[in-house]
Image 1 (cartoon, rainbow, N blue to C red):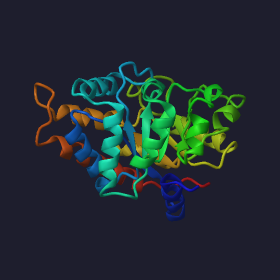
Image 2 (image 1 turned 90 degrees about the horizontal axis):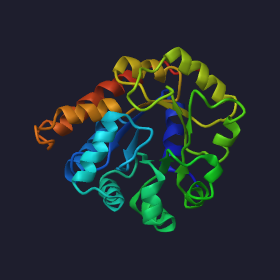
Image 3 (image 1 turned 45 degrees about the vertical axis):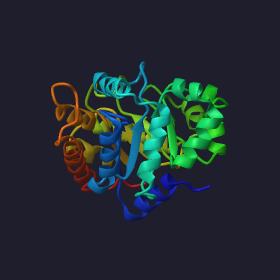
Amino acid sequence: MTTRIDTHFAELKKAGRSAFVTYVMAGDPDLTTSLNIVKALPKAGADVIELGIPFTDPMADGPSIQAAGLRALKNGMTLKKTLELVRDFRKDDNVTPLVLMGYYNPIYIYGVDKFLVDAKTAGVDGLIIVDLPPEEDEELCIPALKAGLNFIRLATPTTDDKRLPAVLANTSGFVYYVSIAGITGAAAADANAVGDAVARIKRHTKLPICVGFGIRTPEAARAIAEKANGSVVGTALVDALKNSLDAEGRATAKTVNAVAELTAALAQGVKGAQQAAE
């Protein structure tokens, strides 16, 4: 079946431009504010939303996203409430692709079969589960595909041509290329190196390739968008949120706008890119 992700990337390809993919943490700094932020993202120019599932031990995430997850957990965020957030978002937006990004432990505890039914019903389009390698596809990837969800895999600078076929075997929706060998927010992405990596991966797949980790500015987002099918920004948006909070870490009147304004600036960068030739 065709998902919102498949449809949207086909439309972007026809329009000759890259996607702008945003990442925010579900429940950061609280459920109500988080929902308002997610609702604001498409209006500000986000093409795809990645919604983080709060988890205590996020191995791929740097300090900013770790802190976001802890803020969310401190305020009672759970996987069940994350799905409720998606359900509430879908009341007003049945078009924007939404991907849950996180780790397997909360899904395992929730129960895979129940999670997939609830996620699909809520309006989730795809999953990025950082700590499940291809060797564990029977755990979640294959059931997710059967349930009609895209399963989006990460490729990294250390994923060589020998490993790529395994990484891509059951991947759908798009490929998420991690531009740096490290955690989120740790370093800046090198557009030239990214361009070479994207070209190499495209020799193995026809899926769109979106690039994340290390993109913080409109200029950087534009440079990556010229090399790939999408730019992913997370840490910069999470930092904008954090910088809007009060001394106790609570949302202020500035919080939603702080994220929306940076999203709009980044989106303009992506939309100003000259799309790389396929």
